[in-house]
Length: 331
Image (cartoon, rainbow, N blue to C red):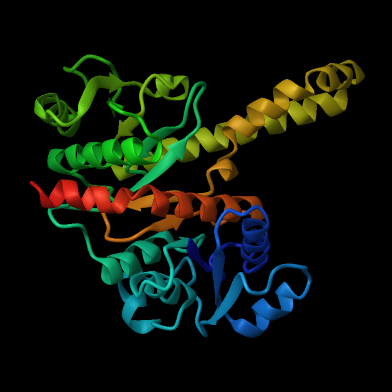
């Protein structure tokens, strides 16, 4: 698999992208990486590493996109940007997938322009892999669509079902609707209307509502919500996990008894940290498109970029996009 990386997307670009590309080929995550960005800067950074030069190719892109750039304008105004050029490589079949830790709106806009939506898909969504006590959970949407109709949420549930089936090999994924209570009478008009429609949809194994307190239990495979709720939820959980570990570290430094206990409990802390670490999955997939675009955190490190490349490569191998097209084109 050949994966294109937008090398000037992250907050610390291009350092994590370059190191992530090196890790990807050394760990045999994919066959080849295409690093897209300012070639002089990239070649200078690559000089720091020993690697198989046949497996990393630098593609020059003279422009970069900031977090303040308007997503709707970048496709026309910044055609030679690292985001647009990376996505175009995939569209031209020179890459099997794209990874970017840049402006999410810009990645979505450029992907929509280059790949287009799958026929009969109303809106693409951002599907993130969420760590739980038992198994990875797919949550969508987590930011692409802040205003949704019941039809949109039902379609997100179907896209999540297909993603879970073909990527995680779940035969009959359990789908839940994120709500303020388990009862079907709870929630706003959007959620209550969506509940009724999901109950009638035969291709979705809908198991009812799920509350925020149960998200980490891993009792379902797919969780559906609008992008406004999903984005707040995912950032709240990430922030809470970070705060808990920061508080623990602070307290351990203050007390020698706590330090001794921490040493004995280190394997447990390490396991919990790994379970809650967003870098383990690398990024979130834009579902509903005729292509594979994986969006990573702006603060991604090399490990996150490497795992995002791994995710993009595995999605390409799974045939998820092909199966999704077959499903929707058959409606």
